[in-house]
Length: 180
Image 1 (cartoon, rainbow, N blue to C red):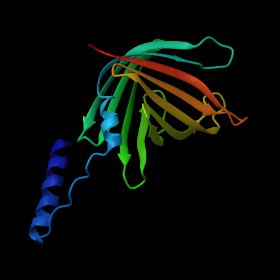
Image 2 (image 1 turned 45 degrees about the vertical axis):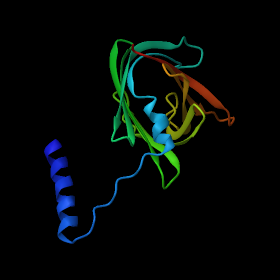
Image 3 (image 1 turned 30 degrees about the vertical axis):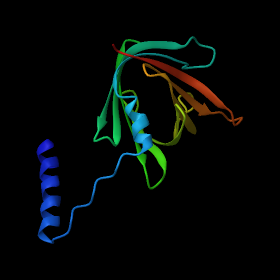
């Protein structure tokens, strides 16, 4: 795969060189990209989620390894074990200067849905919205992930879905502590 990527970059450079044009300049990281840099690193995470109303929450522990991709994207790989089942999830986050929104994706080994995020940053809180199936009914609902930086070594992600009454219902909270 790396060979194809390098070959693609070389082909673009050669194409611009042969016509005398300058290759396009890469995007310049914005303040939103700088905020995302705070999420980089190795984290220990604990989460608690509600699977069904009235049942005890499911708890798990795991890791989150987050790295920058060219200063424009954050790629975060989370690993945990939920009810004796290993789970891996990958989140991508970046800032789309044309849309003026934080954008990203979420995929995990427990579902076949690609969640596409759009959101905004306010202070130390990033609010991301998407759509996905309600785990209980399968019906498509609006969902929200809120990532809050409590300090440089603590982050909290809260996942909610929009209820039929128009109120956001939290169903999962994950707390991350930076590994020292």
